[in-house]
Image 1 (cartoon, one colour):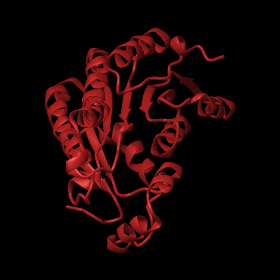
Image 2 (tube, one colour; image 1 turned 180 degrees about the vertical axis):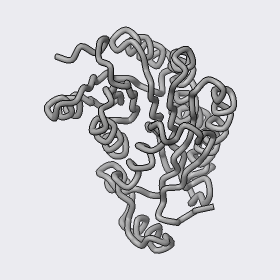
Image 3 (cartoon, rainbow, N blue to C red; image 1 turned 60 degrees about the vertical axis):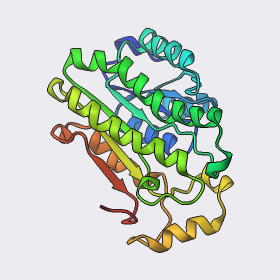
Image 4 (cartoon, rainbow, N blue to C red; image 1 turned 90 degrees about the vertical axis):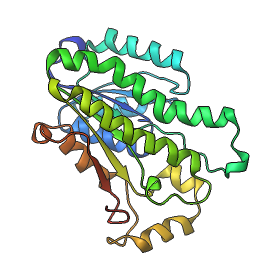
Length: 250
């Protein structure tokens, strides 16, 4: 069993790690030597076991990011178990497709809690230690929907534009302390979850407008993450990197 407290590797928290982009991010960070804290509403134990079996270090801790009390419990548990966080990847998102007329206050608040409040609260909790140590990386997930929102994505696109504002604001506040904050903006990415919830026509429509004419996969995003959390990105902060095959590269 891994002794997380005495492990010298940088510790990375990845939200939404049970599948899709989060799983790909976790595997890439594990391959580069990070100790992983994996969280999701769905169990991450299988992924943690997979990383451990490959010689890495991973801990699965569940958290419902729609519940601010559970976020507080999670951050306290992370500190208790691993002692510190060096890298925070705010990947988890709630993305219901709903026309404006059907979005009530409860749904709106749930979207904003998961997509905006949770990244803020996690950054607030873990940045103090990063600042104290003089090194840290926070990577938020934006979305190409902010540049060209399709019908039914008003609340989600709004939340992701807020993530961009949060990224810029945190970067400004933390920049003098060795902590960088950036965002990755993916296009429509195909994985088990998105394929189950979206028609094939949606993927084809996005593919057709990209400069690179193929459907984006989770592994297409991991290189950008690896760069942003590394030492080579020490002078990159407050940026939104579009990783979308040229779909909305402006």
